Image 1: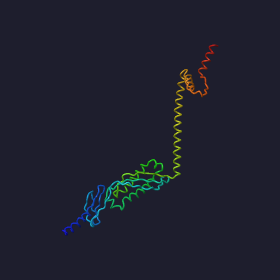
Image 2: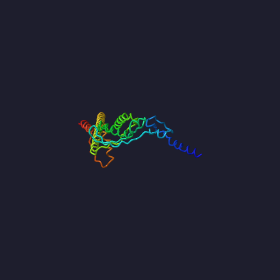
Image 3: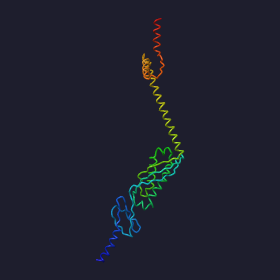
Image 4: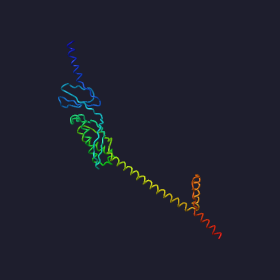
Length: 250
């Protein structure tokens, strides 16, 4: 019995340390005597100690915050830009065998690419088309990291920080643009008003007594406020009526 226990216990211990669990969100790389054998799927896998080993790779989407980078735009404006890049391992064997530290390599590649892409765009274009800049960065990083077994899902530009003097210049430019639009809108309103006034004047001129009725209507509106001082202008039509009366008497 003691001999059986002495034999079984070590076997159970060896068996226990030989079982490796690969989770559903992982893939395992099996090495035998230092050579890559195959990719292990999720589940319990038997690994012979000393002779074999396994390296686990997380294949979930990772979000890497790219720190602020000092970039100079095409029109020589200095700006600090940071982004976040979403990627995942598409080929676990390449991610381990082709690059030493794939997450660090992707981060460095994203930083360099972000500076290069921003240097090819003017400031106004960069501020107005963040999605376009992020798309270029994604395309370049995805293509460059493909030999590493990395798939870039998306890239998002988070912040673009400009120098204080440049922020003041942009604020003045925006204010000038708003004033320009206000002047244009006001002038367009005056044009429309003048056209309507011309139509109204033509209508009043064609109808006999219309101008007199309009004058009486205006006086009625003014009479509601006793503080108003009204200077009454006699319409020309009334004066002509008096002229005709005088001529008939003569």
